[in-house]
Structures are given as C-alpha cells and as structure tokens.
Length: 222
View 1 (tube, helix red, strand yellow):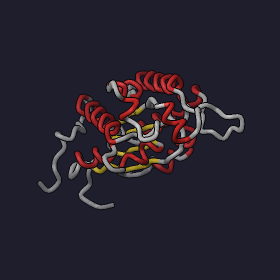
View 2: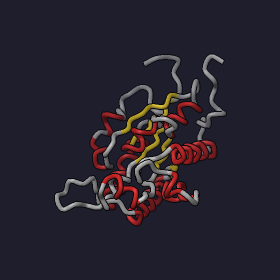
View 3: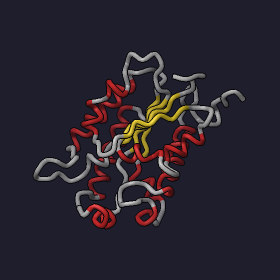
C-alpha cells in the first residue's frame, strides 16, 4: 500500500477487462482520466465466466479489509453466453445460473461498504463472421448475447445497480461490426472509447455521495 490513499476503482471480469489496460483500452483511458485522483485496479481473468468469478469473490474482495473499493465495475456474460458443447468443456453457463451468479456478486460487493458503488457491464454483441475467421468456431451468437445482456440489465434494475448494456451501446455506431472488434469479440480502441465514455457518463449522472465523477475528485498534491 502506498499513500496518500485515493479512491480505488476495481475492474473485475474476463478478457475484456484483462485486456482493457492495453493500448487505448477502456481501462487505460479511465486510468489516464483519473490520474492523481483515483487508482484503477485491474482484476481481469481471460476466459472466465460468472461461475468462476463467484468462487473467488472472498479472495478478490475480502470483507475484512479496512479499506474497501469506492467503485467496482463488473463484466461477465460474454463467456457465459457461448453455446454449450457436447464435451462440456466450453465456458457456457445456463442463463438462470448466470443471473444467480451475478446476483451473488452484487450481494457480496454491496456488503463490502455502504459507499462501495457498483456498475455491471453486460455481454457485448459480437461479429460472428469475424469470430469464425479468427477462431474457427460458431459458438458465439448475437441472439444469445442479447438474452444474457437483457437478463443482466433486468437484475440490475431489481437490485438498484447501475448497468451498461454493451449490446445497445456499441451498436450506436452504424459500423460497429467492422470497427469495434479486433477478432469479433475483443475491443478495438474505437470500441474501448465507446465503453469508457459510457462509464464516465454513468458515473457523472449517478447521484452518489460523495460523487466519483473525475471533475469532483481532488487532484493529489495540487
């Protein structure tokens, strides 16, 4: 631990989180904007689904820590929504279980502190033809991505949690299919900028006290 202590924003999720600190990734964008104001902490695990996330909640977010995150941004759903395979080795998680896993994550995070804020990111859309080209698989379908995204948004409304529906957010660009993904799944700088912009908008518009908007936080040693 180094000082002075700043608000801590934790990014928790699968590869879209792990890769977010890459060049022009949405995590890197947030770290740049919040420089000298908040620490952006990465807990991204490529290939993971919500089932695996639930198993490590106590390790990633211990309840007995004196200092708890000010904000946790959670992304799971993309790997959960892949089609199941006969050998059972895919990352598929049935929709009902996915919702319950996300509920468990939300309950755990809410228990950390009264001031720990939460944003859930839903499964994004995909470029199915690009995925086939890069990975040789037809295991990801936009129809399923939307089902999991809609279920996540519904849960967030039920639990009074902020959410960003990436299925609709990325599709605000007419050319999203060809500009938002590097391989049909993971985000290009263009896709990351859209995600970062939406996160900043949610933080700015949230009626959280204290506010976590970057303009509201003090500059360290100013």
